[in-house]
Length: 261
Picture (cartoon, rainbow, N blue to C red):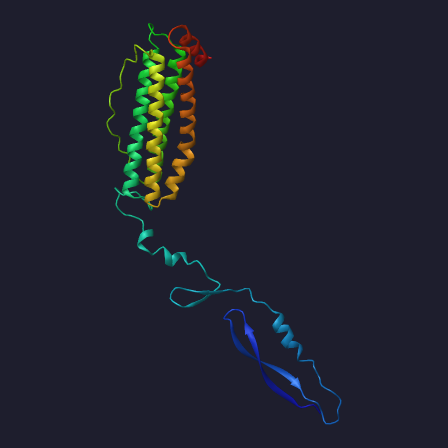
């Protein structure tokens, strides 16, 4: 008759990554030499083939967590994720510092100022005694575009939980006549300088975002403004070159017709 013994066998646990002890039944040879029964050894191989769908996670406190990585109901208890109770405080504001908020309000003023100047140019070239309808159309569209930029910044300010503060705008000139250059070239050169100034202010706005570790704001400025700004500079620079070539007089009329059509 076969003698049966309990032998402790180490088994590796995936969940805790430590050795446990399993017992396997193994039969010993009998005195009559009929061999070993291995029917119960298969239990060990079947255990080893099992894989538990768990993972090992060690928390900052040194505690071992099994299968849980993100604990939102614990993490939201931090003060930084708290929801303000005051009606004067934005509920959406997060990682948006005062310097970024102020810089956006300043850029809004820059955009409105450019829009105001272009609107004055539109009014000048639309006069009956100037009658350069192409230039009037170009500057009217430019004014509307700068206003759209200002409104886009205002919308973003509200998205981030800031407060829009509109600053005063200086009165633009109403006359653009120039004895040597003529009004068309003078106005277009002024527009080119204004576009370069606006571009410099936008680069400064992006720098403020970088300095305050606000990648979302930096991405907003770059994706919504910078490419369009350099394209505007290129276009107006070409207009200045063309107006310099045609000079004053009849050539300006042909240039104006090009803008109109």
